[in-house]
Image (cartoon, rainbow, N blue to C red):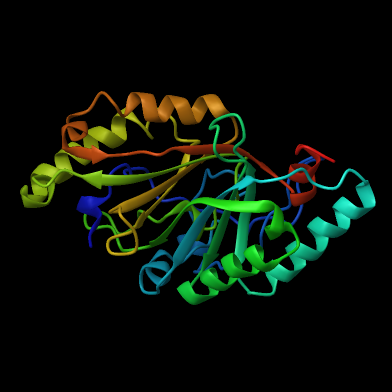
Length: 283
């Protein structure tokens, strides 16, 4: 699996410091994550101060990295009493964290779709650890209020045309406030095109998207054989309009002629577990 197959991943490689554990008031906490380091003289300048500048891109490419997106709907109201609700969320989060997986974020996807309320994004080098996190959520007290809607696992594979293209979620980029996730399937003809032709189209695709929206951070992962899709993409930005903008501009490219599927979309605001619970129906 090579980067010539990556549908929307033509941005410059992200970098920056390990995500901070806190943030501005009201922001969800940043996960620790796994970050590879390299020498100071190799650091990239002019990056967002939230992001790591010492990520060893070769080390990222030389090791397996998996991500799992899980989408759920709320089946019944949460407890109205705040202490009971806080205990429910706290105990469930703690139990889920026992898997050892990194939780990149909880996302409120309600309103963007009628069939979903919560998206969780987990990261780990071991897919079984991600499965354990998923099982633990389902088995937790909160899990009794949730029903699975959709899920997809992805694996980072080195980019064919530029190995410096690293998924933001594995490249030291701190989580942003908004997330958009969607699967992707290329045309049958795409994989039979000459590499230079695919490279040309992907360069145009990148210029129409990430070059106009450099603040949008992309994580493109392979999903061949892991799901019904070929790729799973996660785009992060500080504001929702930036996500709409990058997707909109990428429609005006030749590479769009080689798309068989790029839905469903799951989009939402990153919140702490407690903030997410406060937004839900109560009884």
